[in-house]
Amino acid sequence: MNPLIIIQIIGAVTIGPILAIGSLYQLVWTRRVIRELREWLAKNDVPSPDVSAFAKFNRFATMTWCLFIFLLAASISLLPMPQNQPEQLVLTFVGVMWCLIQLAISYPSTTVCRSLEKLMMAQQLANHGPSEPATWGPPEIESVETLRERFGRQITSVSNSASAWLYFLVASFTIIGLFVLVNAIDQNGSSLGPLLIIGGVFVGTAMLVLSAIRWTSRFQARRAQLLWFLALTVRKQRPLAAELATWAKSHPGANRERLLAVAQAMSQGSTLADALAAQPKLLPESTVLSIRVAEQTGMLSDALRDLDLRQTKSLRGDAVNSAAGSCLYLWAMMAVGANIVMYLMYFIVPKFKAIFHGFGTELPSVTVALINVADFFVSYWFVFLPLFFFVPLWMFGEAFTRGWSETRLSWWLGFGRRAEVPRLLRRLHDAVAAKLPWQTALQPMVLHHHQTDIRGRLERVLGRVTAGMGIWTALREVGLLNARDVGLLEVAERAGNLPWALIALAQAKERRMVHRRRVAEAVCVPICVITFGLLVGFVCFGFVMPMVKLLNDLS
View 1 (cartoon, rainbow, N blue to C red):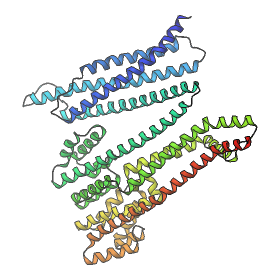
View 2: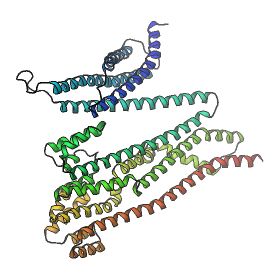
View 3: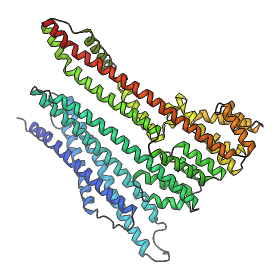
View 4: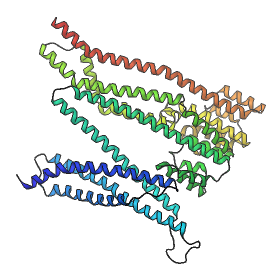
């Protein structure tokens, strides 16, 4: 045998396991070191971790991945290709990309270690340096706070890259191992392999649903925590930028960077609403708009208090989250059922066809209809897969993170406009409590509202109020209030109880929306369950009727 071919075979056998073991070892160690660095960065009293061994390992890993890239590239140009040249090229390309990704993690990890040394030296100079600045040396030295912020961004970037690549590798190895096991079992004539696929689908779907619920709960809890902190800080009349910068250091990852960006923007003169609007993942757009109006009316403390109370109430599981959870449950049922039907159509139906062909008879009409429906879905899988998988996931994620009333689907169906009316009434309540003219309260909503429909309606209201029309009549003409609401508010304004009436009307509208959502959930969930039951019955009849017909024909 050609020695070059022997070298090629040995390289293919050894490089794969080395890539897998080396990658997993490096990624796990990187995540552990990053976790220690975050704890040290959040708590000043924790001793700095020793990363010398980690730095040496990353320097060695960087050289090793570069060597692998050189060897894989040389194998294409120097070694002879076998008959299956496209497969060889694809495997080599995958190996090169794998090494490049590992190199993209090794080099930034080495940079993190160097930044840690620089930060520790800067802290030592700040703690033990001379009390008066020296007249010689470098003209400008970065402050410790600047170095800490940069170091925090670096470890966040490395952590996100390492975590994403680690999860991808683990998922890929699991899927590949499952299919190899299924193939090995299938070759022995056992039906255990397809059953393992079904079990994997069950477990994968359950893990996806639980992960989504866990991530959503943490996301909403962080929002409630931020609103509580802002409300207490404003009420105690503490410097918000400095307090927020200090509080942000106790948060890990990207959330810490967003809070620090808000604190830095406020220290440079930005308002709280402008700083929060620049970081859209911290709070919903409607909440930021309420904060903006409260800053304009001087009712920021009361508005933050009301916002954090309602955000905390949402954590206890209101009707919106319950409806989203029910939809997620129905989607999980549909995903698992679709995979079971695919398994039956792929493994069982061909055996039915062979049996009926051997006996010289035809399949029942219900079975033929089931096969035609399955063939139709398979023929247009590129349409049905995004429609029934990716689109629902996107909708559920948006509903959990932003709230149902903030989703695009809600605004398309008209529910978002109804949910905006109680928030509008609360913002007008702040203007009434501050005794400000209506133009002052409407102007920030006209300029900064995130929905074009509401912004256009409020712009027309502002024009009519400026022309001398009453605000309640103007809101009715643009479709935001009805005649009963206008009558209540006009009577309350004449009686001097307008602030109470605005809050009571907002609460009544919110209760009405919650009641309607619960009624819709109580009606839609049984309808969906019955529909799924009919589909299951159709599938069961499609697989039972062939056996019944075969027994009748044989008898």
